[in-house]
Image (cartoon, rainbow, N blue to C red; front, side, top):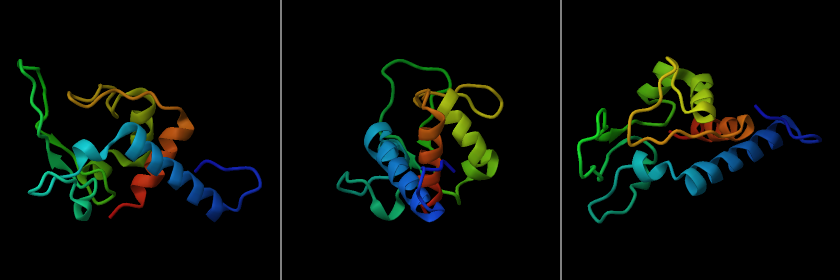
Length: 127
């Protein structure tokens, strides 16, 4: 957890989670790929970041293109395979635990350590 000078641990974590929520939802826009859509095309708030089938495909074949985006909540398989520390490293370096970049269409992020921790702290709050 990132500590803010003069803040209690609970206040500090609340601030970190809020920053992570802002980054994940407004800057990175994780929900656009990782949240399924309803029949009307809206993001399904009941399944927020629970993984989804992508509604985009490349015009030309792209090797290793994924048609689905994994569940980003702590109950998802990504957390079980990687764990929070590897997720932080992935957001900092763009590389997974084995040192490989994510397959397309996932972009390689290069967040600061504090921002990567904040995003993971936010993801920890999702059910």
